[in-house]
Length: 551
Image (cartoon, rainbow, N blue to C red; front, side):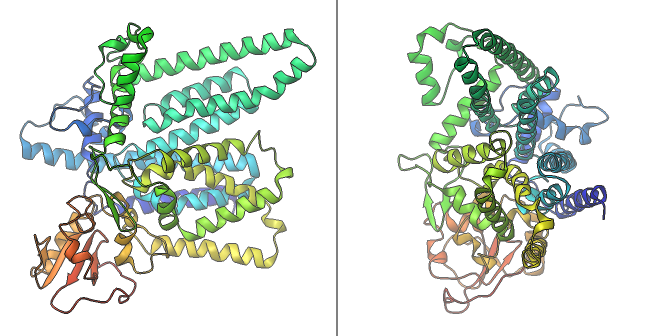
C-alpha cells in the first residue's frame, strides 16, 4: 500500500469513527454555551456571556466557535434565535449537532499536519506510524466530535509550533509571516495558546544564542547589531500581526480600554491594577473580552466556582472552599489510565531509544520543538492547574508525542523480526482496545481498568460522563421501568445512579456514601450510569467481571 493511500485510509477511518460514534450522543454540558457565543459573534457581539446568575459560562468561550454555527445557519447567519424557550432549546440542539461536523474537519487537518511534520523529520514510514497513533487516539476521537474549543486549541497549537519550527530552521520573511499568523489564530481558540508566547521566546533565544555568542567571540559587532536589528523587525511583525488577528477576531470590542477601567475578579489581576500604578492609565491594545476571559480563567481556577467538586482515586475535594487546592499530578495519573497502554508503551520505547541514540539527532533544531511544549504543558497542568475536570485539557501534548514517536519508528527496516512482531502486536492491541469502547470514547479507560464498571473509583467528571448519554439512558429505562433512578436515600431494589452523582462531583459527597462504600455496581448504561442490585446482600469488592455496555 503506497503512503498516499495509507494516509487517506487512516484519515478516512478516523473520520468514520468520529461521525458514526457521535450519532446518538446528546449535547454535553458546555456545547450550548460555545454555540451561543459563536452565534453572538455573527451578530457582532463578542462580549462575554456572563451575568449575575451564570458568570462561569463566560471564561473560555472564543470566537473560533462561530465556525460551528455555519452549518445550521448557512442560509441566513443573522437570523435571530427563537424567543420561545422550547423553540430555543430545539434550535440549539439541532444546530449544535450539525456544528459538530466542523470540529471533525479540524481533527482531519490536525492529522494531516502530524503526518507532514513527522514526514519532514523522519520520513514516510515514521509519518505513517505517527498518523496511525493519532487516528486511533480515543481521547482525541471523543473531543473532536464536540462543539467546544478543545479540538481547535489542540490543532492550532500544534500547527503554530510546526510553522515556528519551520521558521527557526529557515528564517525567511515568508516563514515568519506564516508563523505569526498561526500564532495569532491560536489565540482565538483557547487560552492554553497563551503559553506559545513564552515558549516561542525561549526557543528563539536558544536558537539565537549560539550565533550571537559566535559574533561576540569573533568581535564582529557589526554582524551582531544586524542580527539584533533583524530580530527586532521580526518581533515587530509578530506583534502587529497578532494584535490585528486577536482584535479582529473579537471585532475590536473594547480595544484600547484603559487598564484602570477594567473590573477584575481574580486576585492576580486586581493586584496588578492596584500595585502597578504606572500602567493604570495606559490603554490595553487588546479587546476587552479577551482580557476579561484571562481574568475569569484565573478566578475560576483559583476558586473552582465554575465547576463541580474535583475527584481522583476515590478522594473528593470541594471547590470554592479554603481547602480547595487541587490534586498534584492529576493529569499524570489520569493519562496512565486514559491513554491506551499500547500508545504509552510505544512512547516510552521511543524516549528510551532517543536517549540511547541522541547523538544521531539535531535536538536543538528539531526535537526540542516537540518536547519543550510537552514538558511545559505537563508541568503546568500537573503542578499549577486546578481546573481538574477531565483529561481533555491535557490532550494538547499528544500531537507532539505522536510526531516524536517517528524518531524511533523511522528505523523500522533495521529492526529485528522480534521487534517488528512486538510493534505489530501493539498496533493490533491499540485498535482492538479503541474499538472495544465504540461509540463511548469519552468514557475510554485502558485495560488497567479491567472491570469497566469500576472506572469511577479512579476518575469521574468529563472523564466518564459529560451528560452525553441521555439517549442511552432513555432506552434503558424504557426497557426497565422498574429501575429506581438516583434515589434520595437508602432503598431496596434495582437502582441507577449517575457516576458523577455517586462519587460526589455533582452532588454532595455524603449523599451516596452509603451506596459507594457498601455496594458494587452490577452493570452500567453507556458507562455514565451505574446499576446496583440492592435486593441481595452487598456484593464483595472483589466480585465482578469486565463490564460491557448495557445499551
